[in-house]
Length: 353
Ligand code: SF4
Ligand code: SF4
Image (cartoon, rainbow, N blue to C red; front, top):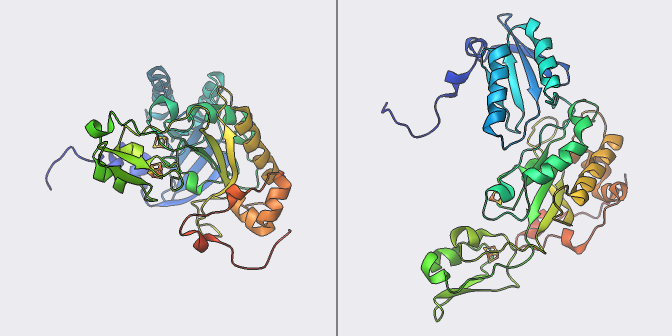
């Protein structure tokens, strides 16, 4: 095979020796306490995993500290989960307690296993991306500070995954998380006619719009946007930087619930809209924090053991969900996109749980 530097290196090269040796031969695993997993292989080998919370954006100083801890207790082996938890991987049971003590002394939250909330997977936000309708790290930090007790314990009915994407291009698993925080724009892009002819390809820009809201304006060598058709998705801005749509007054956050990736018990589910708009309110995002906390607490009180958020809602019915969470049902909750009829509940049966 040709050698190339394109693509990721083989992941097996980075596994601890105990994983390489027992690959595909694990017999079972158990959660010994929140944040501590024990995997046992057919061979009798054991692997202990200590899971700690982590931000998504890490300073080099912080990364160095994490690596030093891994060098000290785990032969240098650690990994990040897809939801940004950091996991220290050890074979020596005798080192687990000292690792836990060191993590505690340094302020790392240990948990995120089993029926808990893991770290929130999120996107780039105002730090980096060009189309965000909200920030990512900011609201995530504020929400997670408030939900800390659900990270370090396992007292929820089931796993609860929260995700944030700062626009509906959606780099952040919001379509399939129990609770999703999604940035939304609410105003149309504003074409900068002096720049469009120089920095944008008109046919590509027109083709980028999923609702056909953009048409060429040959006279101005620019484009015109039909406000009635625009759904503020930002696709056009991605291909044409002269169509900015950031709006400090009108951009904000929507909340979605009930998604999951897991195949356990029921098929994977998409998240559905429950709060159409909350304002951007940095630095502590009180409206978003209160909304997410309310949904978590209502679920914690009403969900049955092992029942994910979406499974609970399907059991009691959406009507009852809105009633229990005291959320308002508005016209914004009604899907009016071209293909919407496929998503409608076409039965006269209503559930009041
Ligand atoms: Fe950028 Fe949207 Fe992804 Fe956020 S979700 S990082 S704004 S593309
Ligand atoms: Fe079309 Fe989306 Fe641009 Fe609106 S924001 S014009 S819907 S591509």
